[in-house]
Every structure is written in C-alpha cells, then in structure tokens.
Length: 469
Image 1: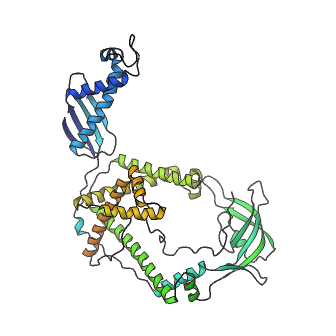
Image 2: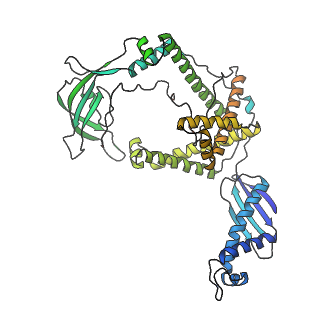
C-alpha cells in the first residue's frame, strides 16, 4: 500500500491510496461468494453459478459490492498507517477499481486538529483560600434546627401568619378556564406556589374553617396574554412549627455526643466543601488563561456532533421527567433557535476543552493508572449498589471505559497546570482527597454540596400536589 497525505483547510486531510491488484481480486472473490447466493442464473442452482456468469449477468452489482468492501477496508489501513485521527466519515473520490489493476482512490476526512498550547507553564493564577467562621457554623446549625422542626396543631385560635402551615381544600369555581379541586396538605403560609400564584399570600390572616376567594395570575406564554383564574380556598387545619430547644438536642438527634463535636464536624464539612468549590473556581480561571494561549482550528463537524449529543441527552431528560419540549420552551420563554444556539455554544466549549487538555496531557505524557480507574469503578459501584468488576465490565462492553480514561486523563492534566499556576502566583493549592470522573458514563461521588446554602426541607410536612393546570 502506498499512501500520501495532504493537509487541507479546516482541519481536513486528503489521502491518496494505492493498493496492489490482488486487493481488487480478493474483493471481487468475496463479493462473488455473497452475491452468488442471492441471484438466479439460468441452468444453475442458486449458489452454484461460476463467477464468470455472475459477472456477465450482474457485473455492475458485483463490482459495486466489491468496491463497497475494499475501499473502506483499505481506507482504515491507510488511517492506521498515517496515524491520523479522523473525527468524521470520509468522502471518497476518484475511485479506480478495475480487475487486474491496482486499486486507487482519494479520501478527504476531517481530523483531530493540531493544538498549539503556547507557554502554558507561565500561567499565574492566585488561589483564594476559603475560611469558615463561627457565624457560618451557626447558620448550618440553624438549618439543622429547621430540618428537625415538627408541625403541631395550633393550640389557640388566631389568624394565620407567614411561617404557619395549613391543610386546605382548594378549587376553581370557573371550570371553563381550569378544572381544579384538591386537598393540599401542609401549605406554608406566605410562600409562593407557582402552580397557584398567590395561594400562600391569600392564607395570611385566615382562620381555621374560613373560606376565601382570590385571583391567581399566571405569567404569559410566548404569543399569549397573562391568564387570571379565580380560586376558592377553605382552611381545614392549622399548624405551627416547633424547633428543637437547644444545640445539644440537635447533636443527639444526628448521632453526635456533644455540641462541640457537632460544630467541629460541621466546620470540617464546610471547609472541605468550600475548598472543593474554590479549587473549581481556580481551575476555571486557569482554564480560561489556557484557552487564551492555545491556538487551534476546531472542525465544525466536531461541534455539530457534540451539539447533537447534548440535545439528545437533554431530550432524554425531558422525556424521563415526563415534560414536553413545547412546555419546557414556554415555561422558560426560549425559542427553538435560542435553544439550539445554547447547545452549539456549549458544544464548542466542550470540544475546545477536550482538545486542549488532550494536547496538554500528551505534552506532559500523563498516563492514567488502572488503579485510578478501579477507584472510580468502586465509587460508581457503591452508588449503584453493584459489584465494581461487574460495573467495569459493563462499561467496557458499552465502549464507555475509554471515555472514562480520557476524562480522568484530562482531569489530571488540568490539576497539573492549575497547581503550577497557583505556585507561580505564590499561593500553592491545598491538598484534597481526590477528584472524580465527570463523564456521562460516570457520576460524581460527592454531589450533595453544589449550593453552599441548600434550601431547608419542609419539616415533617407532606408536599402539596400541583395538579394539572
């Protein structure tokens, strides 16, 4: 095989491939063996006609089948020989396939682009070390207190105030607009409820057994006006929230021996979470500087492929949630074109990030050990309550294990350059336990603390059903 390559604009390469004549002969033999079993030749049982007759009656079909076998096979051998990394299917041209003569063809294909990293070792980004104050700990203790609160029936009759709770019967007298009639349990007085705007506010000042009418105004959807619906609410039961009396009670409820142990544990968890968040913010800044230095031409086909993948995952999530795309777009007031533009923007960033970090990992000769992969498998298996070896085998069969290795390699590359950038700024990074693979096939082992101040759960309260409005 003779292969010559030519670089073209737009991260494309043209390959001119020449193969010996025996490649043509083998492809014709293989095509004949398949075709003879499908066609009928007068005077011969199916599958027994000689090749010369098959070629006489079905010559065009025979040669098409031979070409469709030989050209892709020889193209793949040419790709391996030249060490190029295609990112899309090739376009074949000028195919010369004649019996007794060498096979010759041209293939143009998009390839993984060359990345010029620049002087990435000069990047300097200071690391802002986080702190945890006693006030921060107090805030977390208060959150625990709210989560341990109990709802108890109100002992004295008095008008409802914000922060009280009520069980109500709610209906809409105007069935032409909305059909709604439900018992809603443990509604928080004064709280906004999107499924019936104004319901929580309407409860303020009401008494047990009282009936009241109010108007809910729904925000307008695209091309429509705002809709107003009249509702009637009857208060059936009323409740007050009772909190634990002191921190010792809270400590005992969460299995701590003392208030000091609880506060120390909270402080450690807060610091670990804030360190992780600070590391992520620092890495984002380093990544931005790395992107400024890097020079590359991203093939449009790679962006389009990634955008389609992102869209498919998004559509699957909507389907799993039982949400229609039209309803999502109306609720978020976004058009189809805007949605696609957002996916394209995200796809371009993702592709650029992978290309740059892959180039960095190659430059630094970063290797991912099998022990690291096994650790990720153990974490993933623990979340799924499965055997780590079974998880690894399943991912390998699905072809996802290489993606995990690639993601881990990029993470190590990012950690390396982030550490150097922090040292260059005179603020070395603190050690953390370890990072986790974030590819689609994996989930992070620690995702409980995306927001530093999560909303407290309703204490012992059944969440109201939203109905179908």
